[in-house]
Length: 607
Image (cartoon, rainbow, N blue to C red; front, side, top):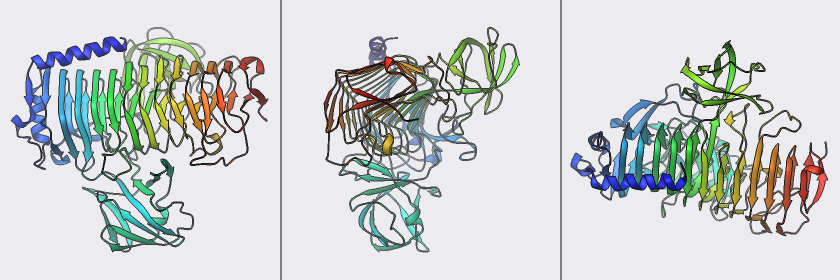
């Protein structure tokens, strides 16, 4: 389904809804601005929409509060969230729960949903043709604690705690707490809001210091701060590391549209879409509310797409103030642990935070590959698939397994791989990457702004030994984007764009990624690196403008090549405009100059 057809289908659904049942939340006792728990009333209204294709669930403008006491509770295993040790029981506490709906519009009209405790804000489970628009989401007490550094000395720090960040000083130590939760693991990021830089930090010197309340909301910490790097005005942000909930969850759904939605804070991984098809997300803001004084809007990722298919479109959206990646699109490699019979395999989830959900289904096409090289060597089709434990699956194929199969090889589900468009979006105030994508379907990244992302603005990876996030890309266009001051958290590896598959063994004349075009973009850099690529074929970098900035960070390393290529084929780097105070060059490793067409100087990497 093309993007235009998909959008037309959603518009038809919305038009149908106006002619069908319109169900008001207020009719079920959930009035706005009462500060009472609206959860039960909203769930009754949701139930009233069941079996009414085209129904509209309508909210009046105003604030609605959702508490965990009366929330829906259901077990979900969600990609990239938590291990058995971190969260043994995967029960999610859900504010708005939609299951088995077909043809529903949730009409927010500017409503504000405020959640209490640690909750998953909403779930769409096995829904089709569903639209949500016109809402804002926030938490009464975000699980992110924030304080502004007022004064800093080698033996003392004074900080102003944000009013939304509750704390107590017990036996001379500051303890963060919320609604029925405390903190025991501390993940800290320092936000320099004046410069737009978010860097990793540490709670350790504060944890070891003596805390004193010197006036309401102002705390003085006495201890060893000689190694603490910060400046007055910086905002210190800290959270627990456990992803026990997600911001929202879209599970096994089809034709979902999110529009004009403001995620002012999300606890957990973010908006997670898992094994869903045709997703259209427009005008989504993942950023703190104006005037809130908060720096962080997302506990971890902004949008996470795992094992989806059809077309994903993210347009006209903003991501500002996240503790992890704004957008991540990938599948999951499972490792072959046993060949049970000529057509039956046992597979295992390997990453500690990803497991427990079916990753293969009957009629799915699969690719066999070596984990060390990421090279595919055979395909098959699934006849049956079943979970045999939380970590293991057993699948039966419609033909015999390739003879060259080895224990430790991986299987990728190539049916559940989406095409992707990310257009007219802004990524900023994030200490990690801007956009991660590994999918073999067409990808268009167009007219976006990546402003001072702490790591690569765009990362194209693929691995079968660490995160096990699949797979190769085959058709990627990156054009018309602006990249400014990206990569400052990466030291010497601070390339703006990284094409970095984790293949630990190189196979001559066999690349991992192919057909990547980086055209007509603007790169505003503060250091030498622009692009790194490994095991990539048909890579084009042309028509780009690269300029220099001195306004926030000077180079910290010796001059080096702007482009680093390893084991690549058929690369063209030419026709670009460089307005920089150095002569750009290309470093080659494990490849010859015959594979590169360039108007820049080339050098061979040292062994």
